[in-house]
Image 1 (cartoon, rainbow, N blue to C red):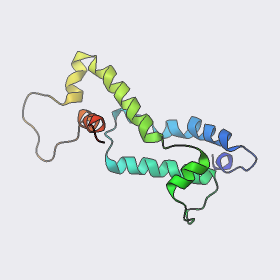
Image 2 (image 1 turned 180 degrees about the horizontal axis):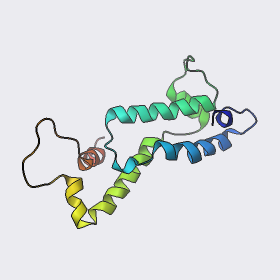
Image 3 (image 1 turned 60 degrees about the vertical axis):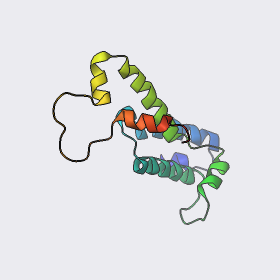
Amino acid sequence: MKTILTNKHISIETRKRALQCYMEPVLMYGCEAWTLSKQIQNKLEATEMWFLRRMLRIPWTAKKTNERVLNEANKSRSLVRTIKKRQATFLDHVMRRRKLEHLVTGKFEGKRSRGRQREKIMDGLATWLRPGK
């Protein structure tokens, strides 16, 4: 993949398509069931920028901002946005099924376990849809 992304004889548009076709599905495999924390979002954005820098042959020591790299590639950050869209679509699909609704919302009968409770998909969706964010 490195030879395709850094090849000077292949146009940037073709390299962007190859990146979108071959690498993004690998990065987003199973993303519908992830709970996106800020740390995971930062890592995904850093990976996306790393691929773009490799594609444009910009060394990691070069002092170029991410916005400048995105402008050079004529691209916007789309990985996290795509993951959120997929999660919302998957959540819509799951909520239509009655029995699986309890798994997503986390409403079970009985005692809660000790310690900090895990973040639920519904909590993540509520923070995305909150006005002002």
